[in-house]
Length: 373
Ligand SMILES: Nc1ncnc2c1ncn2[C@@H]1O[C@H](COP(=O)(O)OP(=O)(O)O)[C@@H](O)[C@H]1O
Ligand code: SF4
Ligand SMILES: [Mg+2]
Image (cartoon, rainbow, N blue to C red; front, top):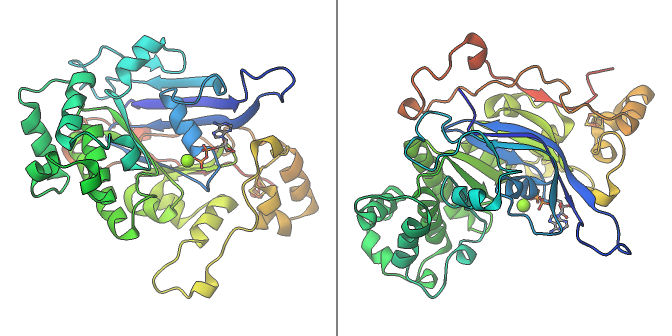
């Protein structure tokens, strides 16, 4: 099975376009690589400031210009990854990092769509929901015989029992959870291959977060759309994602099927994130936190960027500590082969998607020296 999106060693730096008297550009993400397969819910997790949004925004080149630049790597988008793309924009296996802007614009909002943290900012406050959803058909490059009927159908799938009442509303007349479900419908209407959802429930009350994520997962599965879910919340990852990449200080430090990463995290940072998830039976006093905070890109040290906060390093031998603080971890450390995930999505996957034994094997790896000495 071919991935719908492949990031290959993507690095982003900020600080271009300044005058020479100001400081030099600073690299904030370093050789970020992952694949997302058709129908997959792929999570990118890490504390605030780790580079999740920068990585996600690099995909559609939505980073601020002229300050930000993709300084290295490829972002391969495969429109026809499962053979369903023939009738849409004729794009196949293109490098979005280098695609001319006018071609990229045909993919933005059409083949790849976004859901952001604040639904109120994604919607126009003075325009009724109906008009805003109908606009998708004007600019999203998609056509259906009866757009309004399709919108009503999608709103019903998103849990609205009275779609017509919602369609006649202005955004301020609806709750945050309702607005975010409308944004999910908006993102799915053009029948994209991939949705990038950047902290889609962080701004919502905890009580509606689960409902919104369940709607996103359910609708993405029904339509076979892949989702890149950005979150700082390991609890959300464990509940909704198929595979996860853990990011720390601009690098992916661990990646694998969610069940494996949760049951046997290999990297001390992942172990720290998991130890910080509160469980209902747990005494709050026993909840652990990772001491310190994510370094600023300007302060990234040589060696492992987690070394100042790492318990394993602190308790390790002098040889381990020296290696952690000086040696560069190779990008592929511990990685033998990353294969397509085994998804239980039934009809949305091609019937013979896994065509060899190695295709069905999932690999869980971490980039860390702790087992190397
Ligand atoms: N516009 C910008 N200019 C300079 N640095 C930025 C900009 N946006 C993000 N950064 C830096 O890039 C790093 C990663 O940020 P981000 O991807 O937003 O983190 P996350 O989404 O994981 O919380 C941070 O150190 C942040 O300060
Ligand atoms: S490389 Fe060293 S400092 Fe980094 S996570 Fe592993 S043990 Fe800790
Ligand atoms: Mg972010």
